[in-house]
Image (cartoon, rainbow, N blue to C red):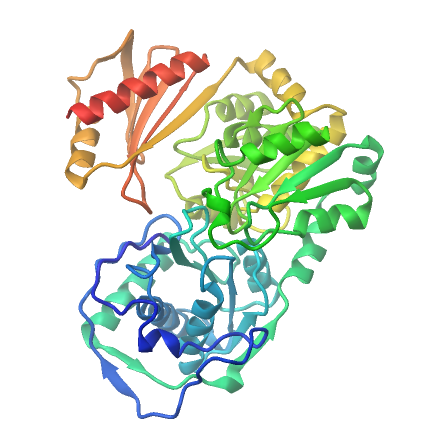
Length: 514
């Protein structure tokens, strides 16, 4: 499902409506409970809700309020009752953000009030754990209260479909239609059904499932040492626990809950993982891995301290699964991903599918049984090994296995890829612009009058999602509006890092001049 930015007059967090949210049994019993009342129909001003690439997101106490969360939950509940077998129940999980557990309990109240059974996680867990539990229990769907990698002031709600991954565009459209109906006709609020709510331990079944995916004997023999940066997110403790069970060393940093994420964005890219770089170098680890706030996106640091970006990680995992392990299946990537994937697919004789940005499009192909591995520019990578879903912990396990398979560091393995396929240097800049300026920028780069950029001719354009222009034979530049934030994203990939930086800087200057 996609992101929701809302602008409304709903109550803030400390309002009386917010204070009645029931909390999981694991929290102190000092919260108010619902008293019996007669159902009433509430009609609210229509908020401007936009479903982006991965759920609803909003700024806490401004857009993301208990009232708005319940309204979105009502739309999800209506979809589950009408579009799925609601008797199979819904799994609800939550991350480390401020009040995520209380919002999850409020969502559970809404769902049980419709007669839908709910299993509510008794502790924070990563999004992929909820997806897996949905599959294992054959549930009607799953809900995760999280804003993923967004800054700490944000929170959100992700919906996971009955197959255990992002909802297909057709499901998103149905949830959006239900949301419209809630606001057009009013929301009938019924008492929650306590008899339909059960607690659920989410982490143990998840660890048991993913532990089986890699060759632990090979990894033990390699004698590599790793460190994991949880970035204060809900994947904390998972990777170290798996390594502890099986022998290899994996220490952890930033593994405690901190709703402010230590003052950084919980996104495993530079500069947010500089702490991981310091830890790798100080501890002389062979690699460092990082996960975003809800554990579905990965980042990495080589033993040299070099950042291994998501495109490089995706390329390494394609190489590992499709070549070394020779597993069957095609490859899928989103529109903004490196062209190195294209070269790998051609060399390995695998069909490549390119889709718009959003893992839901990759998931759709995975459900058809075509895809071995699919990835997006943000570090979300999924494989057909166990679930059509992004998973940072699984990606880290596979990277460690890749290193053990060849007995080499991530940097050495990347050097091999570059030696065979040429260098690919990727960069992205996000700029905060007004909506009108977004439209001007897209129009400018789409226009045929733009036939040259800096020193290179514009040889062709693609507009699958945003607009991408190809610059002679040196690479490409792409401009796209964010689906979850008021940002314009500028991407570029060329054969030299200084060229990529020059292309990005010139694009930013041009956009500001429009």
